[in-house]
Length: 172
Image: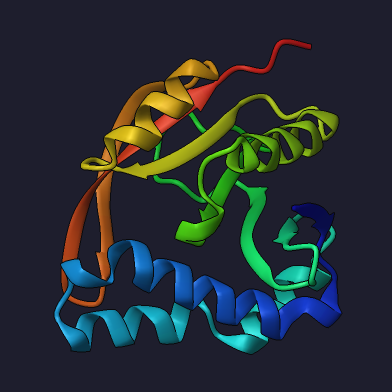
């Protein structure tokens, strides 16, 4: 697998992969209307392009040797609803791998690339939102120093999921 920083030319690939991996991972949980509404907003092509043009954000793609995108991550200014978020705090906003790419350390390498980029920005804290039922991700983040510090309602259409807010204080 090849890991690289995504650029504006990757907007269509990133938006498509985002939709596909979200549906693959969570699509079975939501009514069709709720899922469609969420996907239309969260993976809008123009919004994805704007995010890739924004210097305060960064995205990465994981590709097979043949160049097929099978995973991605996006990080940027923290948008989680927590009273202790300070100016300059960063959030791992999304990290997904297609099922065939899972295992073998690919996700760990992607996560490490994001954390390296975030640490270079010298943020006061690093933040992640994670679904309350995603126990595997919670264990993964806990092993990497993240602790639960709150929770909130994550909207997918009219469905509201219980989401945990995790924080790690950087060790500079």
